[in-house]
Length: 120
Length: 110
Image 1: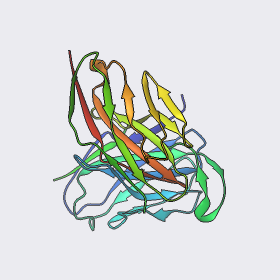
Image 2: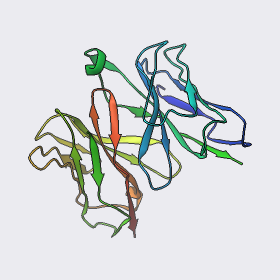
Image 3: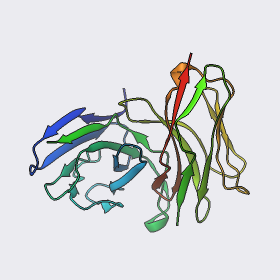
């Protein structure tokens, strides 16, 4: 079955430790995204990647880092610099449909099941 | 800039009641509009979408019409079920970024 997988579903870390969240997709999608969700709030974009070996900061990139070495994988590292890391993290992907630069268009975003990170 | 405003929840209904969740947007250009649903502890699932004015998206008994004149994309369902209890997110897309509303929690009781 094609889809997006995130692991683990629940993750606990001590304050001051870096932690990496996994996101894998076998949909052959070009673009991948990381969002953060806090209680009672909408999703906020952390980072996104339109193609392999390229990524851009979203609205709340501080304290996070990503890599895109393979089309199917887009891991997110939550560093110790992130002041409030406890949250629900969602990965998404979409297919490229045309355009370029700021007018680059992608199709509908599909989401993984999420990872709930708790920093103790 | 681009933004999405949803009615605050929770919305509490009895089974078989009519549902409306309001969504209005502000955007430059001609965005695509989406409704996503999130069940407890899960990721978001696409519920329906519309890509141009007057388009109607529909799925699983839910409908929403893209109204450019009122910049709205209200979600409706004629008869809700207990299994529809979830959080519903309205979103717009300009180029390749999604802008989400804050979500509306729906609780349906038997």
